[in-house]
Amino acid sequence: MGIFKNFIREVKNFSKANWWVYIIYSLLLIAILFIEKDKLASVFFITTLHFVADMFIMMMFAAYARGKNRQGTYYQVISMLVFMTLKIYTGIIDHSWHYLAADPIYILAAIKNYQVDVRKSDWGFINYKSTGFFSVLIFGILLYFKFRGNMSILDSPSQWIQTIGIFSFAVALSVTGNERLRSRIAIVALVFMVGGSAWETANTFISGHIIGLALSYFLLPLTVLVFYLKSWTRSPKRTKKTYSLQQPVVAEA
View 1 (tube, helix red, strand yellow):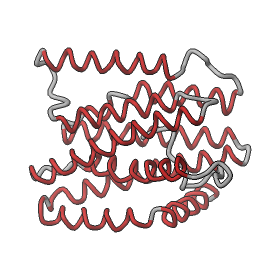
View 2 (tube, rainbow, N blue to C red):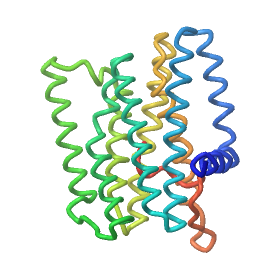
View 3 (cartoon, one colour):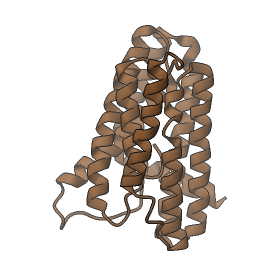
């Protein structure tokens, strides 16, 4: 019962801060009715679960703010499992496996955050340098197999841009103790992620083959980017650190 109440509270916080998302989302769903009506149920399912996973991340932050770190960790694990399930599902039905490529980095970032927030011991070897190197290594492997013709992923420039953003955001999550650096990396990552996802969404609409995860990777990270940009332009005296859905999702994207 407590989980349900926390979930409703975070949905209300999110809706108050990001009411405009529902307008854009509704318009996109209406467009799907005219482009690929049969895909509407799948898109709604994927975007809804993505939204639920984001809510659990916000519940995690709220739990940490109350000092209930163990509860927060459970919320994070639930969210990561939902995200991973969605990516596997999208890979199977839409053959878009590039969303799953950065998950090893997200897992490392989650381990680091767990160590810092719950165990109170920082694993220094997991940082933006090591995760950045690991990201470049995975990206290089993808490039190698792509140009050898052994892979059918990353078939368009929009997917490349989107994937760079997804990897870069995972790197940003591994930054602890330097919120300014984290914000800088996250903003750059989100620009790539949102821009690439918007382009990918447009491509899927034009081709008539809608991919739900492309749509959700455009809309939900866009709310995070808006938050960061507002925080970036806000004076230090006015900046407030609150744990609500107005904060960015920093455990998964």
